Each structure stands twice: as C-alpha cells, then as structure tokens.
Length: 68
Image (cartoon, rainbow, N blue to C red; front, side, top):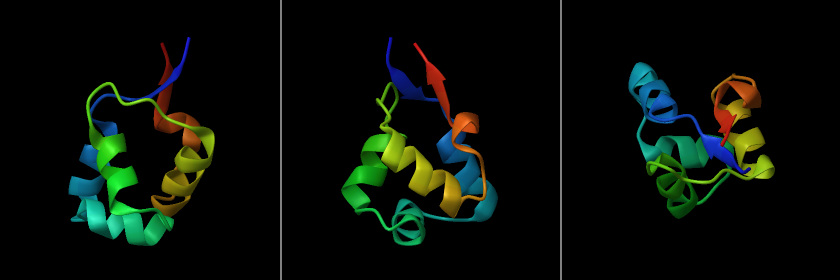
C-alpha cells in the first residue's frame, strides 16, 4: 500500500480559492515542481509534503490523501 493524493481534491481546493499551483507552492513553502507533481493523477504523496500543503489550505492532511 502507498499514500496517494485523493483524485482531483487538491485541484478543486485550488480552484475554490482562486489559487494557482504557484500560489500553493508559495503558501506551503514548496517548489512549484513539487506542487505540480502532487496535482498529477495517481501521484504518490509523502507525509512532509502533505503536512505543508494541508497547513497552507487550512485542512487536515488526512482529508487530502488515501491509502491504495
């Protein structure tokens, strides 16, 4: 099993906020490349990145990921 981003959820959160991937990268303290990888379908997630993105979006990390 591995940790994956919930399909489409990250993108829908960005759209809801009117944010770009660059906006999220800046808010989360991540590179744009990292955020773009997270937005890809079937992208694996790592806990430090999930934590930073969740904090930037004011969400819990477990809301953004699923086990597959």
